[in-house]
Each structure stands twice: as structure tokens, then as C-alpha cells.
Image 1 (cartoon, rainbow, N blue to C red):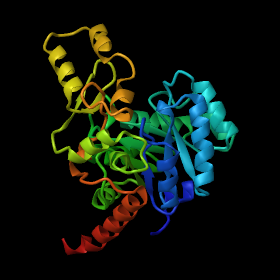
Image 2 (image 1 turned 90 degrees about the vertical axis):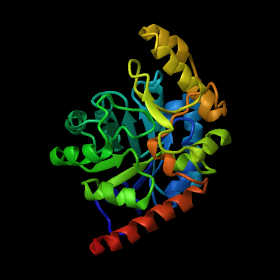
Image 3 (image 1 turned 120 degrees about the horizontal axis):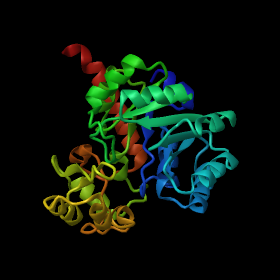
Length: 314
């Protein structure tokens, strides 16, 4: 595969990035994807600072290839997390859910490549102005927390591409080589894939959750809790409880009370499929088996090449 702006920026073989998902993206998944030629990302959002340090150290031992850390900017121990990232010599950081202005100059000063995740043209341009090296534009098909604009990937990518000068990574609803090619035709330099990698042995998610992802069909996820932070969930008992509460026109406090604490951990990491918060993308309807991360990368790239060769037959 020819090099492009993203493969050159990250020094990777393929323009394929594994998303830094909470309760899924630990050192095992990140190193497996990086060893397979993509960019693996450790998801710091569900890790205490000391746990993150351990994952970074283990990842460095498991791969000599580049890998990144994803940091939600609303993280309570943000300063400590960033200090660990700098101390451990992490070379690429993806930031999300917050203002990139605060940390981008500090990270760049340390020679770290910075990428920010956005869900709109407006925030893509703000990120570019803040000095980031690339932007991930994520459509609302994606799992987990989403932008309030509810713009789909197919619409968002060309809109961002039209205005942005720096490299663009597409995310949301991509799990196949054909999806990757479509995103790149629309203007993306690379793709970031999350849900597909949840269904891998290396993902730290609970086996029950992985199986539910594999069993999911079209229509089994929905965006909810928009008053708090829009999140795409698999429909289970907890989701039904939220839906039921909405019929009573709840206050924000009532929604917060129902959500409680650590529901995502309970569902995705501990495997409670009834009471847990199960974050996954719409594309889960296309994921039919659990397979090693390296095989997933290989399958996507091979599917991408095949789809590319077949294009002239239209």
C-alpha cells in the first residue's frame, strides 16, 4: 500500500487506526494492531494513572512499532495522565471530549504528535487552529459517546475535508475494507475503527459483551441520554429502563441518578448484560465473529485492495 499523509505522520504501514475504547483497548489489543501494521491505541479513559503506566510499559515490550494513547480531556486526573505519557515517552496522543487548546502546545513541545477527535466541521477547524497534527472526524454511527450534531460519517467527512488542511481520519460505522475505501474516497487519509476490534481475543472487554456484539443486528443500538452526553448503546434492560424513564419527562438529575456510577465497567468489562451500559457502534450488525486483531487488520486491508481493484467495473 502506498504511503500517505497519515502513514508518514505515524510511521505505520497501513492507514488504519484502532480506536482507544474504554474497557477494551489495553496494551494487548494496541500492540497486536501495531504489530499487524496499523496504529494501536491504548484507551486511558477507563484506567487509573498507575494502570495506564503499566499498560504503556507492557505495550512497549510487546511491540517495537508506533502506538498511541487516547485521553478524554474530561478525565479527572488529566494532569497526572499527561505527565505519565510524557515520562514514558509516548510519541502519539489522541485527545477527545474537550478543548484541544489546553494540552496541544505542551505535548507538541515534548515532540509528541497530537490528534483530536471531533464530530463537526466547527470543532475540526478549532482543532486545526489549536495546532494538532491531524483530526479524527467521527460520525454518529459510532459507539459510545457522540457529538450532539448527529452528523453521519458519509456526510461529515466530505464537509470536513472541504475546509481542513491537515490530515483527516474518518471514524464511525467503518469495519470493513469497503467501508475504509468509501471513507478515503470521500476525502479521509485514514480510518479509525473501534467496534470491530471489540470482537477480538485481545480486547479486554468481557466475553459476554463480545458475544452480544457478534449477535447484534441492524437496529440493536440507539443513541440516548442526550441531556447528559449522547451515547450509543446496545439495547438491554438498562437501555429499556432509560427509555421507560423518558416517558415520565425526567429531570437531568433523575437521569444521572438512574445512570449511577461505573455502569460502563459493569457491562463491558464485568459482563453484566442486564444492568450494564453497553457501548458499541451501529456497524456491530455487520460483525459476525470474534477473531484475532492481526487477522482483522489483514482482512480489512485485503478487502480494501480488492474493492479498490474492482472500482473500474462500475
